[in-house]
Structures are given as structure tokens and as C-alpha cells.
Amino acid sequence: MANNDEEAVGETIFGRMLTGQEPSRFIYEDEQCVAFDDINPTAPVHFLVIPRKPIRQLADATEEDQLLLGHLLLVGNRIAREQKRMAADGYRVVINSGHNGFQTIYHLHLHFIGGRQLGWPFG
Ligand code: 5GP
Image (cartoon, rainbow, N blue to C red; front, top):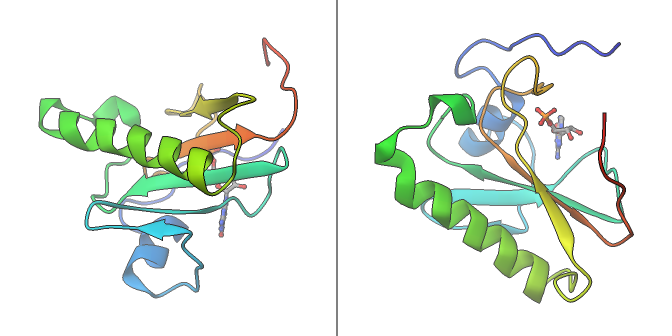
């Protein structure tokens, strides 16, 4: 079983990508979020959208984050439609939250996955 222990707050690889301490190639960025391809894609298209705000996991989001969460979904949808051309055939959005969700990086991120027929349910 893979290790999915938590990383310390503010010490995630995604946090370091946002501050420039870690090299990264963003496929999209604005004042609220960035998007980049997953280093270990599970499908032909697999990118992540993350907020600049260091929310550790979806379970920690509050009413204050309502507009931000909607923004993350719409940004991913726009990337899927305009850059990856997968909207016509469909795709999946995944947010792993916490230990049982098998979250491995504790900076909130949305997985956008597509480009092939996906199965359901997964384990
Ligand atoms: P989680 O299991 O936390 O929902 O997903 C973390 C994701 O981040 C995994 O799909 C993993 O492949 C991806 N990932 C881990 N380290 C890196 C990295 O350094 N760069 C990129 N682009 N993706 C990463």
C-alpha cells in the first residue's frame, strides 16, 4: 500500500511550486489558482487545478471559500474544453480529501482526468 501520510502544513510540493521554490510548468494561472499536468497521469489527460490559498483539504474549506471553489471548477472546465478538447467526450473531476480519500498532498487540488473511457466504481 502506498504511503498517504500527511505532509506538514505549508510544506507541500504544491506550496513550493506556488512560491517558485520548486520548478513547475503551469498550463494556466490567474490570481486565485494555477493548473499543471499531473506528474503521474492516470489517463491521456490528467491535470490538477489548485488554489493559491493553502487550503489543506476540501474538508477544511469554509463558506468563505465558496466563490473560490466554484472558480476552480470553472477553470478546470475551461482548460478541458479549450486546451485538451475532452469536454465533448466527457471527463472526471476528483478531489481526494483526507486519509480515507487517499489524499497524498495536503494542498487542496482538483484532478481533471479524461481522454479515454474511465471505469466506475473505483476502489
Ligand atoms: P492526491 O492523491 O493527493 O489526490 O493526488 C496527488 C497527485 O499529485 C497525484 O496524482 C500525483 O501524481 C501528483 N503529484 C505528486 N507530486 C507531483 C509533482 O511534483 N508534480 C506534479 N505535477 N504532480 C505531482
